[in-house]
Image 1 (cartoon, rainbow, N blue to C red):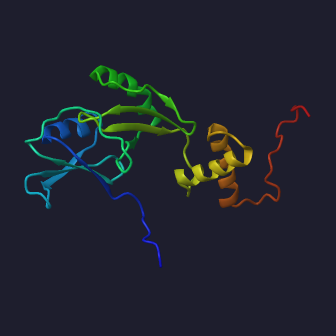
Image 2: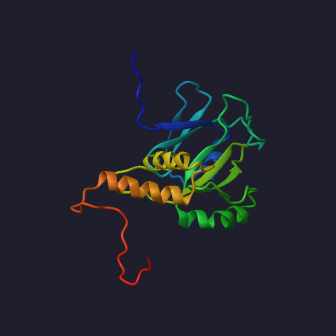
Image 3: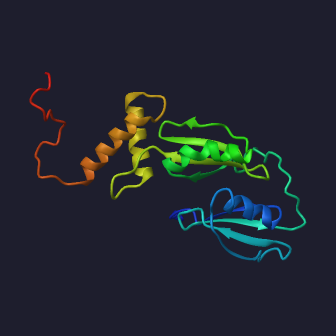
Length: 198
């Protein structure tokens, strides 16, 4: 028996209400270009809208003009998507509270997740959306998940409750040391200034 190896999220499809509500939210609030539309090939009564979340992947929405855009909290039972998290830069994240507030969108306020900052709010139909911003950039040749795996190992090794900035910094240092060559025989930390104490 062998695995069916995945290589990334291809797309996420959400049941929407009418077409304009989807366009106004996904493009008009979150800035995702509306890249194409066609009928839902499995349901002739619906349209299928495609948006680019910024990485060339897709968020797609099934819309139907007979569905009202009524906001109610989406179900949170087991087997149901809890929330959709979208990546934003630190520069954009710093403006998120102000930009949600100017639209009157209720939100969680900034949440400190140790390795990232988050803010939560609901879309016009009640789906929980998270805007997340990493607090680090991975070293060249590595991904965010490489850093998080290494930071997790450090956190467990040290008995800490959750990943925080120190784990990220140390994880990046470890990854660089393992993956990038050096002519130095001893790559340990050094005192480079003659007047350093000790």
